[in-house]
Length: 208
Length: 110
Image 1 (cartoon, rainbow over the protein chains, first blue to last red):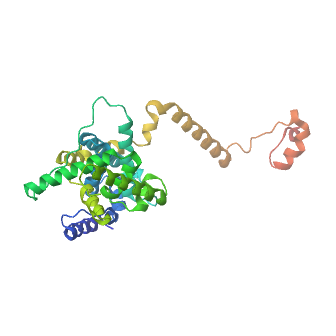
Image 2: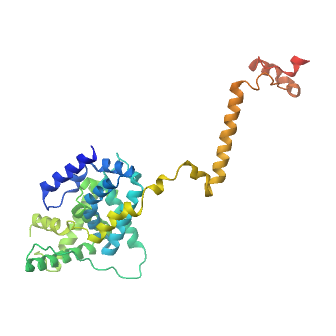
Image 3: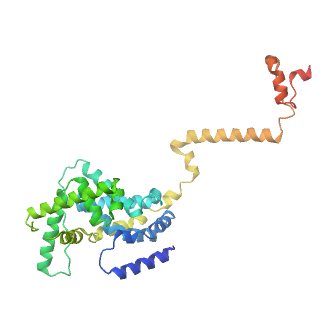
């Protein structure tokens, strides 16, 4: 598939889904071709690949680190390495998106394990400008409650939730990213959801 | 709240938002700030500079002497003048003559 064909496919995808976030699985086509072009030094291919994955990559890093600054640093570092070493991902192994989120999650975990002098800054999502003020405020509060609930989860459960709902990976892909069996992943996800539900119920955001 | 509603809540609440513009700018600048030419310049000659020089030079020397050996052997430059001295190992002379029938030994000149 040529770079032009990939661009047309992306445009069609954007038109088809509008503002709805695109599932990661839909983005798989063309990643390998773009990486091949990047290996040849094609800057526009790098732009397209980063535009495809940036929002999800940042979302994953943000929820894993709990810090906007750290999340930005992790994502920038991963994309820099991707530009410098596009051959780090090899076709035929995991899908590119699965590999990318695994790298991001691992770097976030490394960062969190490193001793820090300052506390993590709070996660604050930008408000939706289209919603009216009251709904927006309620949404922001709900979003904060959910962020807080996710940040309370044990590391592996948080990984499972973030890879599923933020990265948009299927169970098999997320299990591969976490290097565990699908069965183990599903058990982890069930436990994580139960914990989230209990936390949100305890905080009054959900009915028991 | 049903399980389905909770699932929808998670999908909505945890879906990725737009990455900050500052990050988008930083990512766009990566190929500009880190041009690939720097990597492309690393030709095979870089092995002969810095820390790689001693062993690279040794390896190149070994290959060169091997190549010269092959060249001498196959061109026949040394073939006609080669004499195998089996005087000190006379017990093996028959074996040498069997393996290398065309090579003259000390015995042929005596």
